[in-house]
Length: 493
Image (tube, rainbow, N blue to C red; front, side):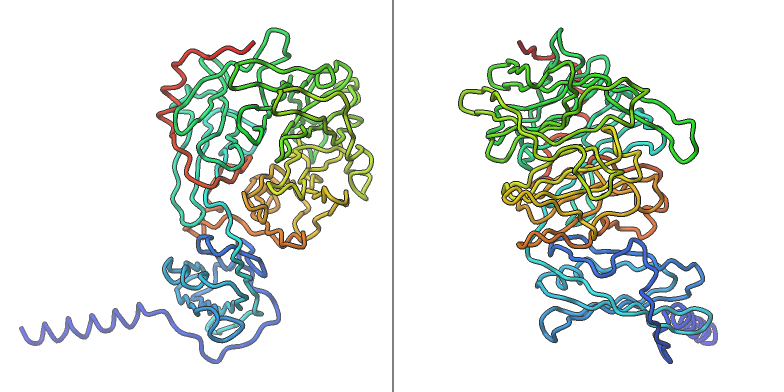
């Protein structure tokens, strides 16, 4: 019996020793940055972000060690990860301690491959005290040809990895669901759309859902793109006849364009539509309306109508605005052009403007530019631009953009962060990226939404679409949407 116990004890010790992760020794230095995915090298991060777990892109790696240390001794707690394989997962408690104090930290990635330890070039994380809004909503959609069924709209807490479903195809009769948008990042006032039978615009007011019929007989369609006024009493929305088409040339897949589109305002209190002939000109396509943070203007995109699809590449949108009076609920009588369609970028191949969104402090306006049309998600050349509304200067955001589609953006409530959807990895799958805008108006290198598993994005066959930031948790879920579908839609006049 004693021999058996001794044998088991020795076996246990051997198993423990064999399971221990080796530690670096005789380390060789490399001048290269580590091939990590997502690319978290030299990024600025908010103190409340979840751990930036990542892969070292080499399946032959036997072990990895990551050391995170303050650039100034004693300023930020240190942190280390030592693991077998090529996956780096940080402990949540250690991560929160590390990010609890702002400052610059240096990150060293050391890997064991073919019996040799190699330390890659150090990179840095700049931790800032400007927090990002803690919740993100997005639509998960098939990435190819914009298949609209089996959709989901989800909300994720970006301070950890908690996620819930706000609406999905199982609870909405597999009907198309449009984006979810909040009023001034307020989770208690938001709206989303469900298309088809029993569908409508679903207005969330402190978790109570109302189904609205934002459609009149003379409108070309129901509401599509929209934005809330600062008071929350009004929404401005576009009605669009959207035409999909397929390219015959290799390298381009889907094209989507509007054959008709107009802009209106809805008074949510009095259930009435507010119209202007300047916003529904039959010779002009108007779309992507949004209120300024002070409620004094409606910004939108406008293009002269052309023959479609024959002259699609001549379809160029400009950035314009029209006054609005929240007290009286009236639209102004003049349209100002802020950015002409031919002056949106130094490159003449990017001349059409879409998706204007203004920072809550009113200082900056983000928008997308592309070669033509109004559907940048399938245009690889689409990029973000940022206008200083005080000076009119336009920043090309060279540190932010990639050589793939970068678009669908929204601001954090403190105007220091924005999120956008980028296809920079493979040109097919969109993912949310966060970008810091400092007090001098400089945009920093963006980073991808962190996930609990480093292999998450490799294993996810859905595209993240229209990400929106929120100051709190949205107070409804998919079962609430299912119940609201049974309501009668409230009419507007």
